[in-house]
Amino acid sequence: MVEWRWLGREVRPVPEPWATPLVWAAAYGGAFALVALLDALGVLDRTGLALVVLSLMAALLGMRGRLLAAPGTAVLCWACLNVLGTEPTGEISWAGNRDPGWMLCLLAATVVGTVAGRVLHARAAYRRITPYGESG
Image (tube, rainbow, N blue to C red; front, side, top):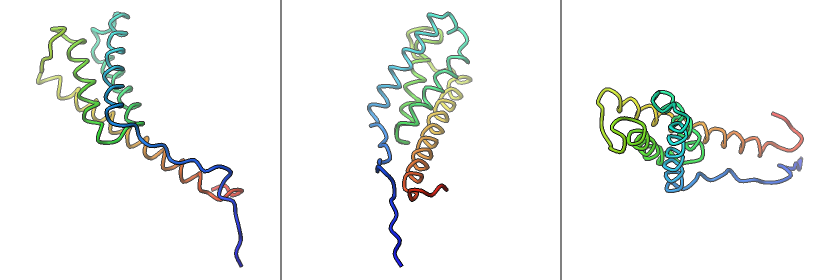
């Protein structure tokens, strides 16, 4: 016997990730704004705090972006922090004891955000196709 069931009231597709150039533009603009805000608040001398704030922003952008955008997002956030948040201000530099860790931290935050975003979207899509009236 065939039993007909409604799959749901409304079919909603899984959201598409943002285009990589859009994620990169948001990363650069957001990093610039956050570093400027931290400077205006007078806490930019604590670069650990700036790194945490930029890592959270990178993770949030990662949730909306593709995995391919993660390295560029991390580099753009690092470049903004390096140029505006450390001495000498206005010049890009490489400190072998600091910058590899910053890059790794920003990259890890972006990748974790991307994976979390994909898992949350997949889980939401799975819940949408659960037959109507049944809770799983």
